[in-house]
Length: 232
Image (cartoon, rainbow, N blue to C red; front, side):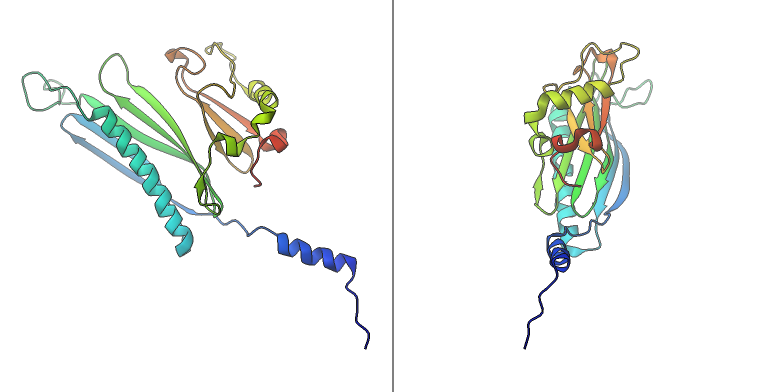
């Protein structure tokens, strides 16, 4: 009995099927809003709750949500754990205006939420007194398949630092001259990503004085090429 040999093209199809990555599916993103005022502190939350109908994936989504919520709560406590006592009363609410004396606001932006990657940016505004409040920006990038959070080093090939910075600066919009510095990988910044682009956010003071504001730079992945390390 003769044994039939498999054609080379058929072998390639089998190999490609064996090496194919699992299909990415979109996770569910539900907005959660909360507004409260207690003891002179105004709390405003506009957050995203990420979930999945798949039990295994949903367990990781719950872990991710809890991780972000714990981070936010700890930051709130560090900002307002020892608020100064109001003069002449037990409440921090201004008697004349009836408005809270302090504020803690949280919002977020979901750049990607799939069965492989979550990329979330959290923006927090805290006013604890003085001329103005402070805005804090954080990125949470999570690999569900690898079960780990990703730092800048896992997103970008830092050996191509000059190449990446050149792309950032080419995409940097500073037409009005509000910023006094060009963006680099050395500046304090947060990194998020979609299927199309890397998004870098520079907070207040990173590229200029407070009045300059927050800078955002997006670089298409087609330009970054191998400098972006994830396979999307």
